[in-house]
Length: 204
Image: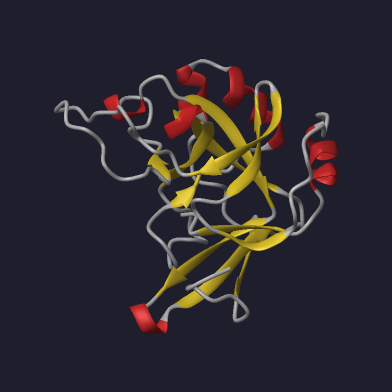
């Protein structure tokens, strides 16, 4: 929803598809990107590295209680309304696809999900910055999720919000209402889903 991402093409190629400069250090190609690891994401200011997972220091829920768990994914239905998400920014995560797992704990089946036409996928995300001990600033993001489309429904009850390239700028700089309108399940039939027998749930 997504469980993990994968990136198998150079970031320079993705930057070209996005029509943006690629003046960040190129990240290595990785087949199993887990929460807590760093990815290069697109913000309104360009490509920049961010950590996947928002450490919610100082964030509180609607009852005023501290949010304790690191935020990996945020529900589109509430991301613009919850107190815990106040003041967040927006970004786009460009990857080649993602993995989902289903089944019993020791008998999980991994599914690899990518674009049916081989193009990159662009996930909607929210962003935040955490001041770590010692003054280090950590820019971080959480993927935005929505109900699944018909392709994903047999595998998972949520999916990441995917953006058409034409809508990326609206997600990054549009109003909240504009962004909410984009938080919809991806149209059916545009994804390729296959069993991923070469991926282990326990590690990269």
